[in-house]
Image (cartoon, rainbow, N blue to C red; front, side, top):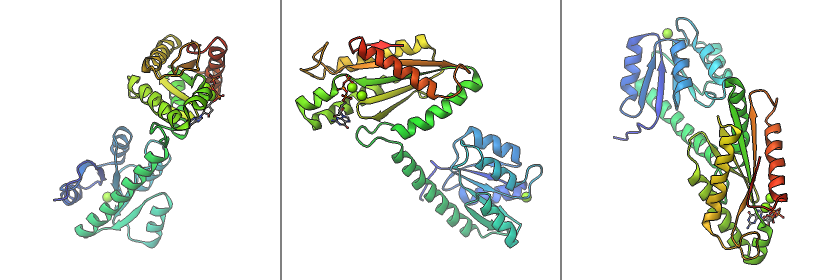
Length: 300
Ligand code: GH3
Ligand code: MG
Ligand code: MG
Ligand code: MG
């Protein structure tokens, strides 16, 4: 049987019999979570990675429509497709379901084969969307996250840092004398060098929440949530040393005949800045200092 337990579906219905019925249809193919009411459904959706929600409309407490509205207004849950599965059969109800962001609408009593077919279709679309989303956030040359991924992450992490009153640090790394490298060794070897540097940065990364991205050209960024300036400076030194240790020959560079990076460190604590552009500016200014002071070094 075509088992696809790597997809998780949440079924929300206030009738335990209905939940059992739907669970039996889908369980051979997917991992199934259930909720008898809206509050629990929202809790599960915010806590856990879901690929689809089957949502009853008439529930005790918050209605299915309201749950869908809340899911669609939250960045963390907006991309989970919702199929309404409901006894509300009027045209107006169905139109309403699509208006608030539902992906499909099935009326009760339902045919198990049709529920399964429509669920499979939504899961198929979700997998495609996830793949496109992933590809759109990767840099084509180095296959690490790109600027788009960084823009999303810094916005999210900056707000999180403010909310939790924790420091957020940013490293901006720039390869030293890279124009000379290209001029001396040629563009294809320049591309190889960018790939190797990117890989070594990824390998040095310790925590899942740290993000390494290529901003463009020979510039990389590393976002370090919950890291103060001292911690970030230590991390920067590890990244700098890792690139130096690659010992990629760069005969026309100074101070070393290897590819090296200069790194600017910036840190914000809680509301010292209103917008993350202040953090980028701080790291950028520090990078400028590092270049000015002779390269292959860190400034903060
Ligand atoms: P500095 O130490 O001051 O940073 O000097 P630099 O030469 O590294 O800086 P500059 O900004 O003058 O040159 C950056 C070079 O990076 C120029 C460009 O040819 C090269 N570059 C940018 N993107 C790519 C790329 O995708 N592949 C290759 N091979 N080279 C690239
Ligand atoms: Mg109901
Ligand atoms: Mg540069
Ligand atoms: Mg450079």
